Image (cartoon, rainbow, N blue to C red):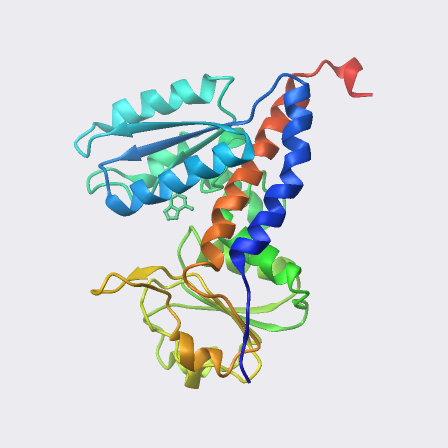
Length: 292
Ligand code: GUN
């Protein structure tokens, strides 16, 4: 078997084209959706990710602004900047690009983003609401994975899903979304003993452990759907996922490439969340009589 590759860039283009009308409707009401990105310490990978998000905003007709801080910036300065952004009516979504430099506690800083602007969905209130099934925003990467599965018409209910990775950004919300859709979900991580024993049971295997080549073809059930969330830069500069591409491609029914798989979907979901935040901001300020 040779897996069908799930083209994240193509699916993302469809997401953007569906957003066009919603952005136009907002513009007609005098609102341009706006995203503010906070970057601390100049991490080269973070700068690339932020540049991609700024480009995506421009292409989708969103306002964006980047607030950069040095690695030695005190937490109080970041909290004050976030407080100001929370109150800025031109900004509907706020993200703090992770990871933060050593010495800054991401948890506390991300928590200070207002829930209605937490378009990364990393705040505890959004993550907690995800457990109950009612988040305002779902983190972009797992939401992008669900969108790709649905786009390809892959059934989820009743199937064995294995998530490798237990991060708050991907693994945990990914497991919750799959549970909500009726999958039987197992969460492993890079330290799981006999990882292959678990992954070989997966009909849907999502790998987000941050280890190049962690999952090889012999660890995959024939015909499984394999979603590779990893982005690792090899010594020769090449970007690779967490999945050994060629050997897994020979076993899986569907596979996401790296790059060009989940990555573009993460950004598209962030833009979609920001548009939703702008829509919600209008609904929140409209007088009660105007909602009928
Ligand atoms: N670091 C890795 N992924 C993400 C993401 O989706 N959002 C932010 N803010 N930081 C990240």
